[in-house]
Amino acid sequence: MFQVFKRKKNNNPEPIVELFIDAPVYEQLKKRALVEGISENEELLRALRRGMSDYWLRVAKYEIERYELVEKLFEQSKRDSELLGAIINQNELFHEILKDKAK
Amino acid sequence: MKINWHGISNKKKLGVLQEEQPVEPVNILEARKADDRVHLRLAMSRGFYDELYKFLEQNGLTYWGNDKRVVPLFIQYGLSEESREGLEKSENDLLKVSSRYAAINFQTSEYYAMNQAIAMGLRMHLEENKYLKQKMKANDLASCVSEDEWDKWDENYINELYRKYVFGK
Image (cartoon, rainbow over all chains, first blue to last red; front, top):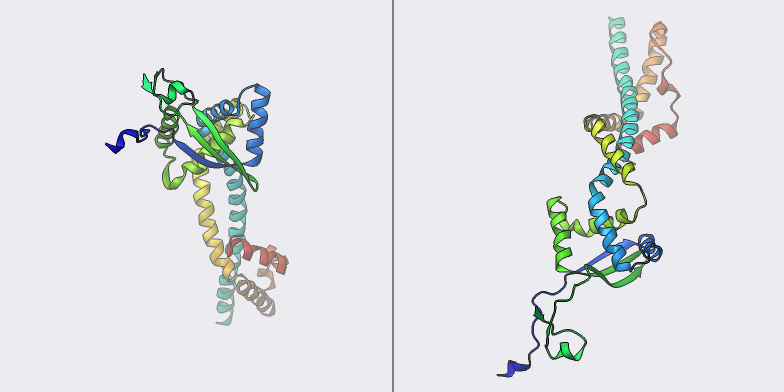
């Protein structure tokens, strides 16, 4: 009987999401909202939707940039490998020549 | 139709039947600056929240709290002024190089492991090489000895190789 004045429980509360974004990104959001003449909430929604639809294209762009870096690393490590391997091979060859000469 | 108990007007406070109000899909409740970042507290409509998390799940982006990292990226990407044509070109370029990419990625790690093993004892190998070259010359085998690139390596270059392959810097 004492529950008559109990506040009704909200069974479907709005989900709360907490996150961090870089300060320049937030400034850009505010600026864009101002330019477009819409609220920050609307601009944020647009950004989220566009970001979701472009996500895999962005991943592709990142991978292409990484590919260029990996290609440079590949060329460099290949060249280093050839030189480092050549030192070991030359040492072995000289040991053999000197061994034959000593016989 | 639903009873809105949390409204502002007296009618709402009295629990008068209200038409369902369209909720804004995203609502910035708080934007607090913390160093070079901004902490955002967002209220989302159930519909948009479900849409967002469905996308994250379908794309395998929810592992280990990855959503906290990816959602800010959506905002950043969405605000970018880069053209979609440019991004689509990257996708096409990636498709063209994907097999070579996989191959050189693997091969680079192979070279790296090999170079790491040799770089660990590089000074010793170079000393040995120098000694053997002298010994070859002393044994009238100078014709077999050539001037090699590593003969010109100074301490700085050797340290650089050591840092790169042994410490991975």
